Amino acid sequence: MTDLRGKTIAGSFFHAPEPDGFQFLEDALVAIDAGGDIAAVMAPSDAGYAAARENARNNGTLVEIPAGCFLLPGFVDLHIHAPQYPQLGKALDVPLEDWLHRHTFPLEARYADAAFARRNYEALVGDLLAGGTTTALYFATLHTEATRILVDICVEHGQRALVGKVAMDSEADCPPYYRDASTEAGLAGTRALIDYVAGHAANHGLVHAVVTPRFIPSCTDAMLEGLGAIAGECGCHVQTHCSESDWAHGYGLARYGVTDTEALDRFGLLTRRTVLAHSNFITNDDMDRIAARGAAVAHCPLSNAYFANSIFPLRAALQKGVRVGLGTDISGGPSASMIEAQRMAIAASRMLETGVDPALPAASRGRPGSRIDFALAFHLATAGGGAALDLPVGSFRPGFHFDAILINPNVAGSTLRIDEHTDTSADMLEKTIYTASKSNISSVWVGGRPVTGRSSA
Ligand code: GUN
Ligand code: FE
Image 1 (tube, rainbow, N blue to C red):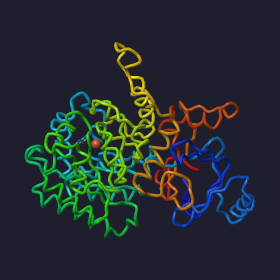
Image 2 (image 1 turned 90 degrees about the vertical axis):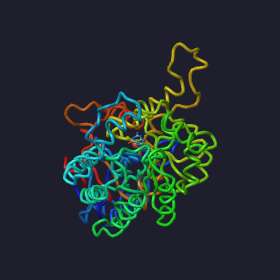
Image 3 (image 1 turned 30 degrees about the vertical axis):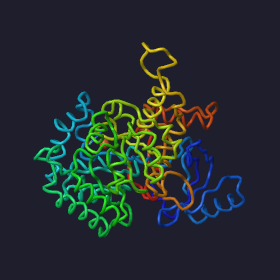
Image 4 (image 1 turned 60 degrees about the vertical axis):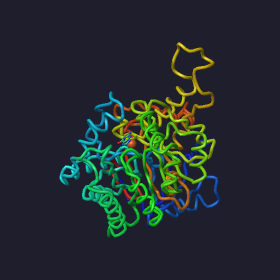
């Protein structure tokens, strides 16, 4: 594992800066400045390539990627519940509203214990980095201390992160053992987190605070209004769950007579900096509204298979100009892997396109034009997530942070098998998305800084 700040890397890179395909930068040179940002990207056909490579070799800053290995941008997990990691893979057989009250709120309440929080957050952040998640948009819990601990751990481990203290003050819909002590206390906790992140001496812009109403059912109008005002003042990101399941979507409609999207907009919570998780039941008008505000959607296909009663109409949203990235939504989704999220996004889009009930005639089963391919899934997991956050991450472009993972197909037991004689670059990337596992990720960097210690490059 090499610190790549101030170095020039020679190797092959895949990225997908735009939704319409990937690029293979074969034998490219990527120069990284002392701050960990990409200073230059050169192809062998570029005029200065040979001289730049020679120069880097002579001054000892050239890092050559081992033969057979290649780099991808680090993954951006656009929706993840940090405290739910201990129940990953559990309790997937109940409806969302039961799952929250029977399993999730009792677990999240345990983060009142700072030692419990530290132990679990340490494990999560380490595991996510090893899995290639270099940026995460986190829901924490409603506890201010535990949420500060998550911020500290991201800073210590070097993970780029956006962290929200969850706001939930509704006496009707949150249990007494797990809700903000009052609306004012919840708002004060949100403000305190924003101040804590801004004043964090070691942060240097790696971690950001996020205004985080859990979802409409768990918040009073006063809370939503207060959070909208804070978001307006501080310019922070906002995250919430939107129109996730029949029940959650119906709740918003019953309370306000309008969709979640419109209600959030009325509270000042639908901005260029907003990420709406799920959004499966949003209407065409909602999509127009989200696009007009410049807000984004975190598509969580694995979680949606269990809790959403539907599949997010991804293609339709993209066509409307909605910015979209991918989320694991652990533990609603039972995998922390952004590679799994890509696979599931592809599979779910195919099921939406063709429909799934063989009892129906083929012509009336699905929604034509819904499918996505591996290149679009890869874009969503990298550059799409970066764009949704307005962060310069997710592709190898000058001025972007060097957040990257090294894929090594040549590890024991690898299911990723690449034949350099017969596989094209498209084959290499497609095989990686469908068959790579954590064991193929041999190094991970955030801002050029090595963040896992698993092997050398
Ligand atoms: N809606 C409100 N809270 C949650 C949560 O923790 N997970 C999911 N998937 N949906 C939610
Ligand atoms: Fe969620």
